[in-house]
Image (tube, rainbow, N blue to C red; front, top):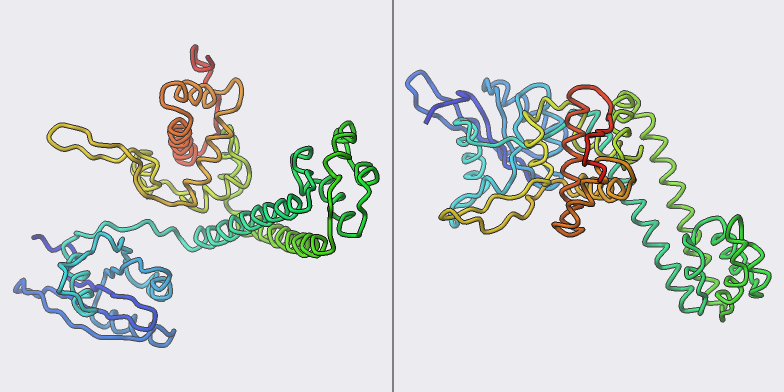
Length: 382
């Protein structure tokens, strides 16, 4: 096999140790390997970088093992050409596995160009990604707390959610605070309704006729406190995202012109794929990396399945939400496509197909640095 990188190294990264194998090809064409173990502290990783530099290494490959690869990546970034490999692509023959053999195997594959590099965005995008993922977790946590609030209300025979769409909205929160304060008169609680819900005061009076005990009040008070804490943290992360994401504000604004893409969704999409589409040769490559393309399973001329491939679960969840929102818009090409696909494929498959279309639009907008323009060709809005 051809030698692509004459002086390269493979790293087998663990929590406490890094096994490095330097593989060099001399003038005679014979490959010589040297292996050495290092710790994962800053001083040890600096020593690793110096050792690789002394050996004349130009390319370094490592497995994506949890989060343990990140310290080594940060320490080597900028000094070497780095390749992050999917662990599933580097499996060795069973019964021949040690840390040293793993490092040697990675170095050997890298030397012959047999490792498909994973997409690792630049540091600003990685920081943006950390923030959006943490905010997403906080939003999910708040939703879980809202569900637990609803369970307590049901236990107290309070049917607030039957009348109020958002239990944590302005009206719902005012009623919950009054319940926690000891108010149990349905008529007085119903008078706390705001806006259009004031028309539903008779239904509210019936829904709030329950039996709230001191135990229920304690649970509601503690859950409301945790909801406020989660909302405060979400706000802090959003403010920080505004600061860190300032250089990408123009790209986020372009994405927000796509039907169904909100400001938060645009931030998540940018954090996952970045603003530079040069890493992906075509929109199809981006869709495949994101896990939004049909899988290939063909044997003997027969197609045995077409399940989508695995990709970023964070990006997939956001794209599906965007597709669901865009699919229910009126007088838009995406909405028309979704409705046509839903009739033929079913709602779930139509959502995934629409999400794929949204990702293709994202690729085009970021590549061409333009905004979304609605397609009004005949038949699309049918």
